[in-house]
Length: 230
Ligand code: CA
Image 1: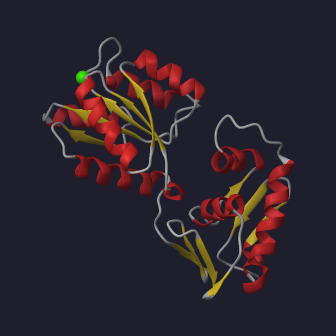
Image 2: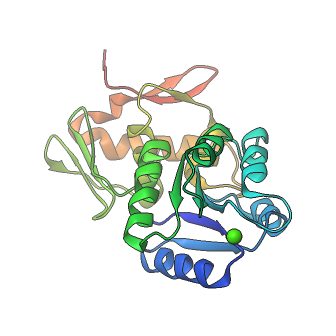
C-alpha cells in the first residue's frame, strides 16, 4: 500500500537513489535537504514515515529527531535514521532521541525497503499490504478483497480503509476526529458526521456474514472494532 515518505538527506545522489526506489515501490516521496525544508513540507502534509540523515547542514538529524518527538503533530510519525557512522553509541543516541530504527550507509535499496516495511508494520500496520484476519474476517489490501467466513463481501474504498484501520487496532476506541486523521488523512476537511455515514455503510457491508456486530458504538467516545461479540 502506498505511503507518503519524507526523505531528509543533503547529499543529492543519495537522496535521488532513495527517492527513485521509494517511488518505484509505489510510495509518494517528499524531499528535503535540511531540517528547515523538512519543516515546511511537514506543515503542508504530515508524512507516514520519515527517513532522516544524521549529518545535515544546520540542525543535525539527531536534534531534529528529538524535535519531531517533542511536537504533538509529529510525535507519532515513525523515523528511520540514516547514518554513516558505525559507532554503537551513535545508534544508541539515535534510538534514545526517538528514532524507530537506523540504517548504516552504504545500504542497499533492498535493505532500506525491508527496514521501512518492518517499521511501518510495527508502527502503522494499516499502511502495509499484509493480509489481516480477525474473527473470521479476512482483508487483503493488495487485492482489495474482503471475505467474512470465506464469503466475499462488497465494500467501498473508504469503508475498506476504515475497516483495515479498525482490524489493525482492534479493541481500541477511536473518536470521530481520530478516525478522520487516521483514515481520511491529515489536513483533509471532512465533517465529523461523515464518519457516522461511513460507519453505517461499513456495517451494512459486513451484514451478510454477521460481522457488523464487531463494529461497536461507544457512547460519548466513538467507535471500536471488537473480537468479542456479546
Ligand atoms: Ca549528510
